[in-house]
Length: 177
Image (tube, rainbow, N blue to C red; front, side):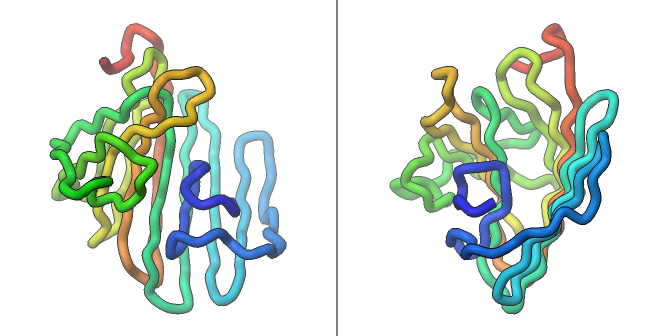
């Protein structure tokens, strides 16, 4: 979890995590729980595999309020069920020059974002968006198969956050697009 925005993870204040030791708290065939702590920042992540997908719960506790970003990449563009509008600015409101076609997603009143990536067999995502956090979708380079890399990004400023994502696998005939 050290390289900001390059992996499916949480990034604090746009910075790389310093060298430190994380801890594996729990490990079984269907569940992993790990914790990473440095300079008053603590991240805990639990990934649980089910028969039809997986869930990913990440909690962030910081010593002081900072920018927190939850990032997830998928194969092809992310298609939210909520309305997504072009984000103004040279690199959109997401603030990362490597992103293109940045769109701000209107977070539903229940704060639960739903959607999928446009490629056959992509999972359906259900994601709880923390209060005051914004949601963006964009495209990026770097997908090894040559297709667009669909990025989903949540951003807020706080001293804590809880991100709970559930991914449900679908058959090819159920895929969006």
